[in-house]
Length: 462
Image (cartoon, rainbow, N blue to C red; front, side, top):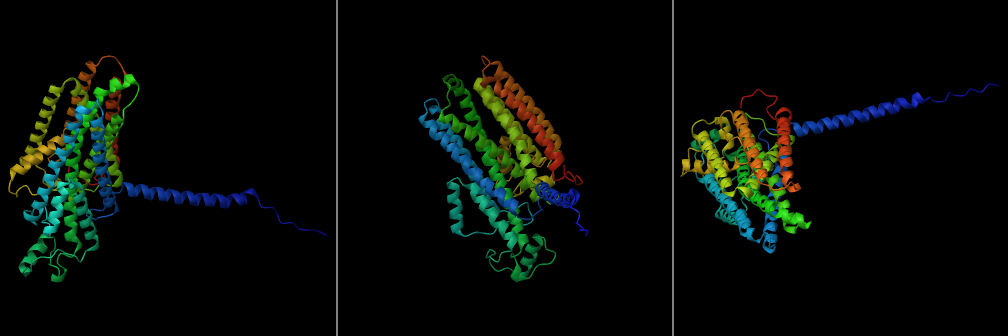
């Protein structure tokens, strides 16, 4: 009697399903990675408020508070530290005075937007707000919270642009001709029905884009006008106190707070420049919008550019204080004149409309506004390059960075020649400046060749 036994399953029969499962899992993971990378590097949709805008706004708020609180802690510990007590007043003044200036600009811009702007200018006229809200704005600016108020406006108008809110601003009755004029200014070929006037997303979209630029301008001014001088002062103080603490073999609490403040200020400065670029590109449809990866890489490039510049300023000031003020004053004056010359004589209309939040042809001060704004942006050009709307920005940027490198090399070389000995705190700045210089080139190359929003487009804007 024969008994037939079924053949045992081979190893190949088991391995084929396993290989298939592994292959499918690999393809799923690969697709997810590609989608994630595409999401990070894909420019955000033009003129559409989204999660990316909310996140950048909230990150900006967090950096503002972290930066200010770290500076307050530095001042607090300085007051009780005998080695740094004499710098307490200077630290407080460099924290408060720049914030007062920035909040003054912000409050003036609120008034300008509501009273002076026109629909056919560079800025849309914002709706008139009640007296109670004006009281809240003034109170917020007196508390030096301009950045927070601007962020609230940004989020408010951004959400309205998505919802097409029914809570449109109440205005006096207008005639049919007035409706047609304002609808044409808002971009309509035919006016919408009267009951739907100002309830559409396009109106709030324009207000959101303008609020985004205002917030970016305020953050940029706040970080670079307040943080940069504070950075130079704190590094200057540390350069004078490190040798003594190094001999004692300990680091004081004050210095730990100073290092925290320096790091927070550098991150805030770099992120504010990246956010400013994002906002200006958002304001001009002909320019591609930044992606999440683009904003991060651009911020890193500015971080590596600002860091060594501030370090060289501080170290040079420890040995040549009078010459330092002369060099910085000449640098600031030359940068301010260059910006003013660009505004008046050779502007790039597309970039100019995207960069400046307010119509230069209007306002009670006219060119005086431009002079003050050029002076503020001249301070920004002390530390990093920002395209303010001139022609050939790439050539301007290349010349700026070449001169910056020459300036940094001269300052660090003259400082090192005046040092005595070869301690770690004397050769470490040479390593930091060289490393940051190479990193700034690397991040700039990654930005322009990998994540720049216009890299795959026909270059219509320089």
